[in-house]
Image (tube, rainbow, N blue to C red):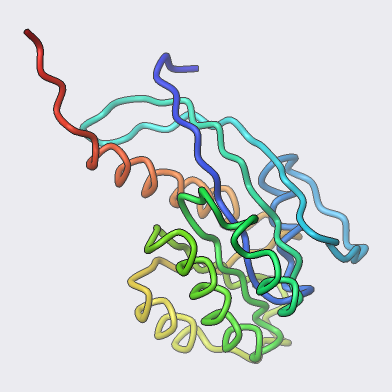
Length: 187
């Protein structure tokens, strides 16, 4: 792994059963389990990735991904504790349930109220269930434009676009953080 290191906390938010835990499991362990187990509170996972940041070179990124329980009441109750220090957001919706995209506004605004504006990626999950989609690509695209955010059609089951989407967020966070660094002055 490269010599320069960077740590980043990322929060994965969205309604219950959109596949947040499965997306993290696919990203961290390259594994999928179709049994639904509700996340209680939060679950923290870590993955180390190599990243080439334009104009800054290679970094080892220690990414900590916080899987936040999908119940609305929980979000309001503990948002300060769970969102504090997050450098980026993964906002997940379920392509087979239209309401999950509508509810993402509240999740994103909840994170922003604690972190300020941080990079965000929209994950439209369950892309493998195309025959059951209630959302169109146009709807996901319009939503992502409102947040000036990239979007990805992901499948935790097949792994499609999962690694790429997480890496894209990591690269955006790294670029933003490095751009904010003050210049080093040598005497």
